[in-house]
Length: 191
Image (cartoon, rainbow, N blue to C red; front, side):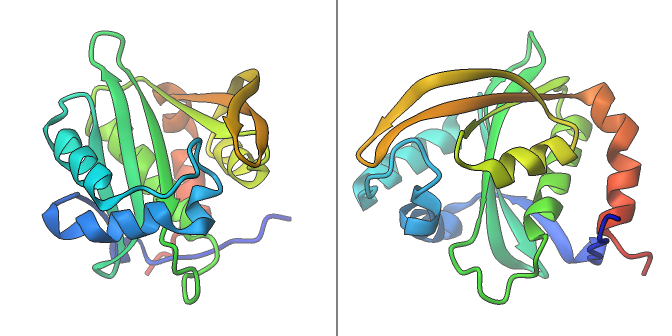
């Protein structure tokens, strides 16, 4: 039996990143709970982050969003390597480093909003992602949303704490369109 986790749909939104979000994103990217799941675990300097932020704000091949609950920032979503000709892009996301007080299942809600955006607002037909092999919870979450494993890159990422493989995954627009209604029913209340 699947446990239904109900949220109120209007309480959530994706908003384009702006200058006000810059410091919060740096704090999140540097928190241990988030760096643990990144390819590069070193601390990002404010200068590096500033360069990244301004470069990405002008990059036509990427879009970055703040995920908000009742206006409060609770997550970050990125679409990168946008390829208009082949109608594909990559994506990544993370929740806030302040997990206390966040409702269980909020990552699923953020994934739902991200998928709705990329397949409804952009001309994307294939959404790609990579997940470190030890991050099995995110692999399962993506599979719940229709992603399939397309490959596995062995011993692909070298970090100070070890060498890790990468699970390569993808979701196609037509597959999302078939299941999004059922996923919405499990996530959102009728009120």
